[in-house]
Length: 497
Image 1 (tube, one colour):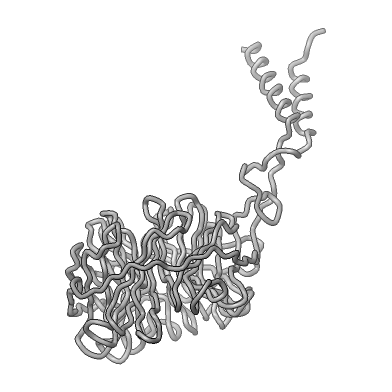
Image 2 (cartoon, rainbow, N blue to C red):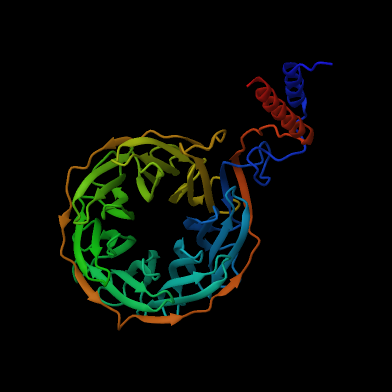
């Protein structure tokens, strides 16, 4: 009997379409997630914490696509008043491991990052007890699974020395910034410490706008392609209110220049990142201009400290930037906290800018109580935000984790929505400011520490997730039918041509 190729292909196509879509993997081919649908969560809001208080001050997206958060826990601590908490989650927000580290009193991380070799590094403080009245600068290195490798504390006697931020350096070492009250000005000076890969001190510097009353704090830094460092923070040594501060330091710890900005209210810099041209982009807040009590301030500068562009975003209440990261399209993503857009107690905020600082979109995340975002990481297909929240907490205040899509949204989750803020331009340039630099290397006391560690089972709460509908999977019968269909098509083409 003569066969009809067209009829054969039609029958095979019908078999494929009728083949039941069961018994296989999803189109994404990823492990099962929660709660259902495609089994792949592409966005989520998650709370982390127990019956007391947990803070998240820092977070990092690791090279394997996971998220690690670092901060402080009152619920999970083997001893003392509160311990450092680190926890790792996979890309869908499922807990992988959790660790606490501490001593007899309080310990906390303010920054956490992943090194090129996959190890982790944290910076913060260790309280040494009421008898000594000492809070020491704390740095610690960990294996990828959170196991401690080494940790050190440093600072002056009967003083406060705190590390707020840091990063790995091009030579494999580290640099950390914060403040100290133990050396020159008891009100507080900027403290900058550079370390080797094994934690030894290469140099230590304190920086102040003047010798005398007035707090000066360093809150962020980055290393430029030239090897120099940009630092950001604020100073209260120039007047009655804080002024924002940006400075450039040479690789060996000398001051190249310092710029300040400010008016009649508080200003400051909370985050800074280096740009490919040798300059920087920084984010913080301004209180003397804009729409409300504080407005979000973002600006780009050259290697000499000249302003390329600057933007203000705000509403009638307090708004301030907490983090900044580059985006795949060459623009910038800003994390912030706002009381002008959403709940009056505070919500987390994202602002997307293009490479020239032009506004593209903004979104907010939070519930009916106080929620704050401390930073943001840019992903290939979205953003990871971390901070604190009391809207969904099991205790007084818990950790907040949010993964959004590339538009800053979590589809189907009412806790994430658009946000409208007013954009304006600041009307001043930066002022050259003379700073006093003190070399502390020989005076800086550095002590090795062995913290108490534990691996608690911490509670997590999935508040909302975007789990897109599953694409029908093909079973074995469907796969065989497809192979026959393709074979018949090739045979027909060969006969015809």
